[in-house]
Length: 296
Ligand code: FDA
Image (tube, rainbow, N blue to C red; front, side, top):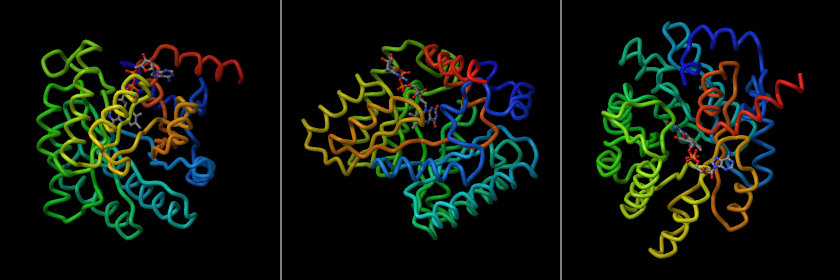
């Protein structure tokens, strides 16, 4: 987790290119190459959300560049007719520099997305950015009139249940949470995180709100399926989401059972933080890294 947020390592990684197995979980470095991957996934029946990797930028130039890149990604999705939405991180769009500047960047992305009838998901980052992310998301919807934006709630946070209740009616992606958070604000114990995860999923579904269950955990997925059957919740009210390169068989199994499965497809050269978080979450993922290293 230290490596994931280390600026020097992130910078060096951009120069190394796709070493250490990142290519297995990051779909490509350019828009063109990633659109090809999305077309392949669509061919199998999977829908996607594209994420141009990058976070915690410190200059306005970088944030503007990232905004334009996201706009171009939406244009490429439209031009190639693939089925994909977009996921963004607001610290890539200048959130740490100036709130209003970040909102302006979000508006330009959302206006393009609206034109092409696409949905934009604001990924949830660390706890320090949680409240401001929710506030901006609500402002974008209520003040600026964008109904094509939603965000993510992390079940490891104590505040998750209250947030889900407050966001009734808004499409949410629900996750366990990927950052290292303090015991002051977050559950540390796996079983508490899992219990709260099921709790918020059930709450959002019972609130009749569109729910994206983003997890590779087959125990959770089985319980969600049983719950939706028990409560006659239509499969149009939810979807499963998994990361590119993870649990491909499970993705296909769910698809064959008639569920919607969306693959989160990260791309770009700023892959180091994303890749390190995946390694930290599941040490078995190190086998990806080793395979990549030895195949060089
Ligand atoms: P978890 O890692 O808890 O694993 C539980 C069990 O599932 C394991 O013990 C194992 O049995 C099985 N399992 C898990 N992975 C497996 C694998 N690769 N192969 C075989 N078995 C496996 N986080 C965040 O903070 N903000 C965000 O915006 C997002 N966005 C997001 C989008 C999408 C599409 C996904 C899938 C995830 C995120 N996350 C996220 C990350 C999320 O918070 C979480 O850290 C990871 O998904 C890991 O938790 P899981 O629920 O997948 O299972």
